[in-house]
Amino acid sequence: MASLNELIDAITLVLTEEKAYDLPTVCTRYGLDSGDESEAFRSRRVYVQKRLKAKDQLFLLDMAKRVINDYGSAANSLAKLVLRLSPTGLFTISEITRRNIMDELHARNNIPGKYDLIEFLNRIWDLDSMPSLDSRFKTASGDIWQHMINNSDWDDFYLYEKYLELLTATDEVFIKFLEQVVHPLVRQQTEQDEYVEFINKHLVHDGYKFSLADNISGFPVYKISKVLDGVKGNVKNLIFATVGQKPEIVISDSINNDIKIVKHEENCLVYDRAIPNTGLYWADLVTWWADRSGTAEPYRDTEKSLYWRLYKTLASPPEQLLFRNYFKYFKGLFDKNFPALIPQVYLHYDPYTIKQRAGKALLPRQRMDFLLLFSNKQRIVIEIDGKQHYSDGEISSPQKYAEMVHADRELKLSGYEVYRFGGYELMDEEIGAPIVKEFFEGLFKKHGVKSS
Picture 1 (cartoon, rainbow, N blue to C red):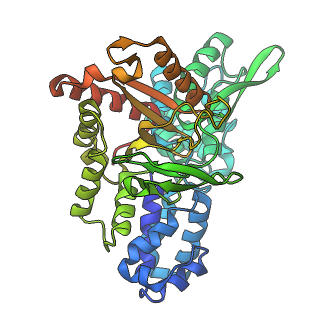
Picture 2: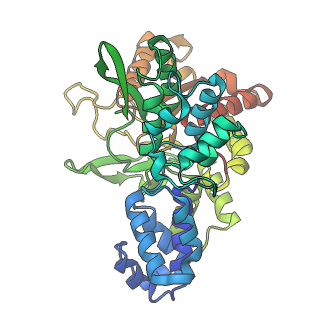
Picture 3: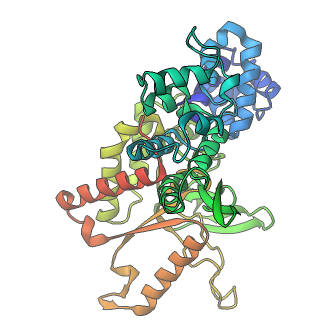
């Protein structure tokens, strides 16, 4: 399954064959942001990727087709990649979600329910309009009858995943298939409820779920729809990794939520690029850091430099342990798809004092220990709790604890996921490292984040 990053890389490979002095004109022709030749001369690859990262799936797919048409055989690799994609583009229901659902359906061994197989499949596909792969038959109906009913030399796995290609079908076809699996004409209500429950358990990771849509003679009919969860709006003003005094920030445009750092800007980092729908990867940060540093390419030394710049902002040994072991266990496993773990984030920094707000703290969470952006909607906050979170010195403070949980509630209601570690459990490397590893394995599994 192709990823958005693979598509960006393939387009970049074609365009970077252009001369640096022609690249700004070429990019503008495809609707990308303009720039000057000096930026292109520093690194053609960085120049192109910086502009592609700001675009969504539909734009990139349309652009890929235009590039293929313009460059012909020079874009063969890009053409092959586009052919691997669904006709409607990249999937929103991921391959891992489809795989998990199909595994459970195969285990239950009753996909057609009360229907015979051919009748069930015709509720989803027009088998008689699909050509046969066997010279003895005219249509797919003949193939399936011969190999599933007459000879039984195909199993369900081959039928659904190889012959009917459900793992690489469009979202629309896969959704139609699932809706028929739980239709009241196909399945008894008690079994229907069970199927809806386990399918929802997987669909939710991609932002979908079965909902009651109608009824037939009192029997429920379920349809799959998009779940309105996660955080509204796109990430912007990503201010992080402060060393020394915290930045002082003001709102320069209250309509567009544009900000300006008026003091201590040199102490923090500001990621000023658009974040793709697929989230922010470590490779994106490294490319940005190389460009910021005036380095033509993000070499290994550039990556090390960024790592240690972030590491020195961590205020406590437990924070350092979590950050260090995140890289130790997962950097090599994920490679280019390694999600960026962003420390000391002031995304919600409130520039005004409580006094200036007439006693009301608009944003109770001033800083996040760590932030992960799996997508523009799925944002993960990780907090490492030292005693300052719940005590004044050595004396426990119910007020501080209440403020902390109130801030968590506000974030969760806004669509964030918040996870807390007690600082004590990450004090010792031998005990803390396995805890970190197990947590991130579970988090990646929950969100369907796949390694390379």
